[in-house]
Image 1 (cartoon, rainbow, N blue to C red):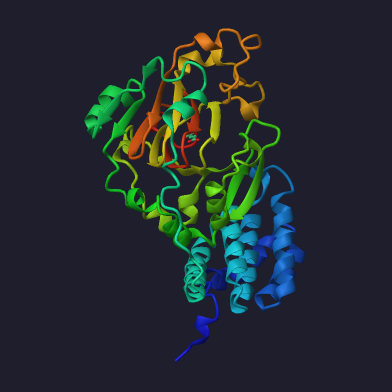
Image 2: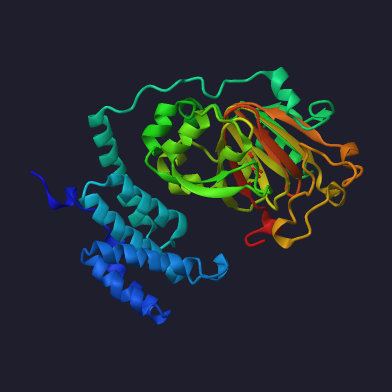
Length: 406
Ligand SMILES: O=C(O)CCC(=O)C(=O)O
């Protein structure tokens, strides 16, 4: 027996909170939104799209931190309405896009509804796809293309010629605390993530496509976030996987899913990773889990972050260079506030005249291999280049001294 719930998306939180959410939007001056969202809730497709556009405009009306939280909830609400209507017309890809946009841009109140709907639409999309039988087997060695001699030529000068980062196998928590966390010294920890499901699954394009192919993700396109041609795009994960496997390696088209909280967005991928025990050192709290997924040749320019960081390498290899925080003044930080944690120096093309002395500074570096984690202490400068297609996860956490809102 088929029930109406097969053809509709359930949104229990929205249903019970709709009047109060609309009341709050009205109090914030969103009378027109409230009236149009009421029509959207009654099934008017045009009104649903218009409400989404209205909330979008509010989200972009000023700096992100000045946007009232109710407008983020309003955006999620409108995304749910749009998704419901697409779902009932069998347009699963459009429904998922609206739901992902709700997760990426929207507020917290309706997150559980968004995730509930995503589960249902994804299942329907997968069932449709397997019916269409349109998922050909993918080349399985996409992340193994690697020629050390060729790759070393692409690295910044003096790479791998000085001191390399210490490597320790299955380092105990005690050892980590005593020898690295307290003194603030980087270390590579090997053999500590063999039990992650991701180690066996993320190198399989078919798996990635199956669990996340229809989802919309934000990506960065261009040489890196400091270059003028750099831009951000929203594309489906399937399209992104296609770009990773593409033979176009021009820097203008380099596509990097970088510093995105992918695991808050795609629950299935979160189940594939395990927060390392090391991240509980210092009695602080986890600040963010980010995905860094891209083709060979992505570069994250020299910068530092305020938190402790474990960068876990799940697929492929990365070159990483680290300078201690004590060298900050000599690393020519940008003067603008937004970029003051990034260096003006392009390590791939050092201009010694403009930045004298930079080539003489001491650093430690390494090639981070699959299954290894690198501990980067707070404020240590790091430059990262992927040597193959690569998928890493960073775990940032604060300690008691810089927790919770530093
Ligand atoms: O992997 C990368 O490209 C950059 C990683 C990074 O900067 C970080 O984890 O803070």
